[in-house]
Image (cartoon, rainbow, N blue to C red):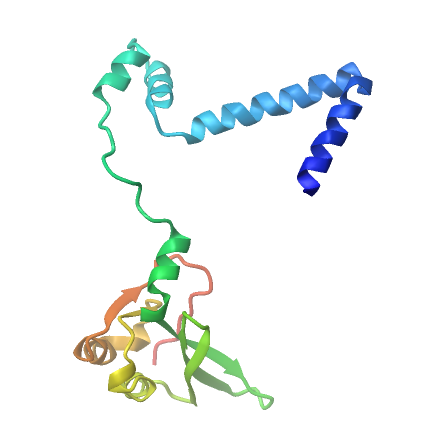
Length: 187
C-alpha cells in the first residue's frame, strides 16, 4: 500500500521536476538496465562477450547453439536451508581468554533448524581424541544429524573425522578462506 502511495505521489510531482533531475533519473535507470543485462546469462550477454573478443557472430546464431535448460532451475540457498536445516549441525572450536590471561578452548555444537545449542565443553588442552569424545557425547544415536559443518582446523585430526564417519554423519568442511576461521597453534 505504501509503495502504491509513493508511486502516485511521484507521478503527481514528476511534471514539476527540473530537466536536470529528469536527466539524472534517466541516466540512473539506463545504468540499472545495463547492469541487469550483464547479470542475465543468455544469448545477448554471450554475443556481447564474443564481440569484445573479436568474433563476428550474430546474436541469433548464439541463441541457436545455446543449450536449453530443461526443467525448473535448481533450488536457492534459502530453499535448501529450509528443506535440510533439521538435518544439519555445525561445530566449532574457539579460544576464550580468562581473567587470569590463560587460554581455554571452547567446543560448541549447534543445530541449525532451531539454532539450539546442542553441546558445549571447555578444556585447556584440546586433542583430536577429546573432540571425538565430545562429538559422541553431543549426539545420542537417535538424534544424529545428517550433515556436520566444520572448519578445516588441524585439531580435528583423523581420530575425530573417523568418529564422525563411523556415526554415519556426512562431514562438510567449510572453504579454507572463510571468515572467522580458527587456527590453533602447533603443539
